[in-house]
Length: 172
Image (cartoon, rainbow, N blue to C red; front, side, top):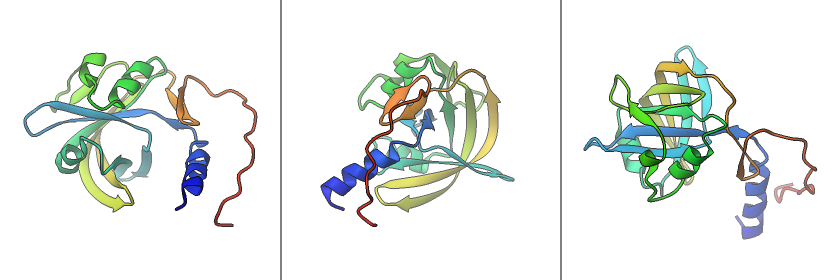
């Protein structure tokens, strides 16, 4: 894809507002591992399945590819610093937030809108990412307003904004 077309599709995709999640697990040596993800979606209610994706270049890619289970945390509006820390390579991610080990030994972040403990069910390589499908084994609803990601930035709530200049798809 040409550089301009790549920029335009990225800008168009950024118009879809998403929630912000942090996915955590433990490495084989027990070290807590996590990253910020906004590619989270429900797949099925019966059985309860969710999906998210991870870049092949992510430092934690191999850990998540091989782990047995992980926690997906839906961040609250006041957890912007948590989202930023878990999105930064080399940051002290777990020093930036309150957390504890849950009953399964996974790193559970405190103060989230909701969380889902998932078994690492299946994986699908696509492009420069791998889609991970997890079976929800446990969950909790903390409540509150979620943190949102829109137009390549974190926002606390969506407001009426001027419509951007229309871009024509290079494929039409």
